[in-house]
Image (cartoon, rainbow, N blue to C red; front, side, top):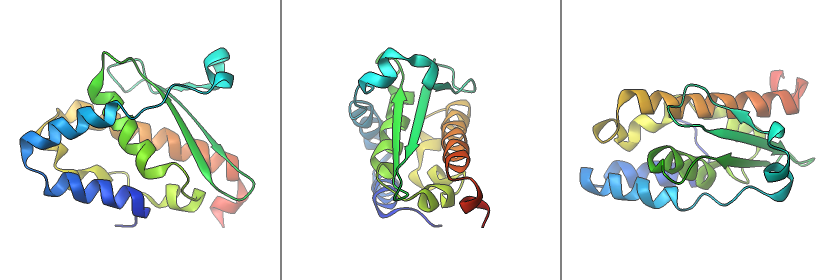
Length: 147
């Protein structure tokens, strides 16, 4: 599995953690989601909703001229599971190259053991978030992504 180093570290930590600590860790990651930058908070039309999530979840991405990806997420604080997913993706993908983001397997989270602590429906939501993020990045890099 090809993962950026920071995402690989998160996946390995979750995979090694006992079941009860995975829930705790997911909740801790929910607290790592920073507020939206002003330009997104003021113009929410720049955010894309991920409808597959049970909770209102929005994201945006930016690819710098040097190919560095920046990710932005918005989900209610009352939804710690989905915010935890956002925190994991932020920790693992913020600052990665666009190619690293596109190379992340759709089911990268299976090695984290989250299937033992959250429902399959929520896991599909995480997959949908990654899918939308990858699509946005691909659209921004255009022909470079298709080689």
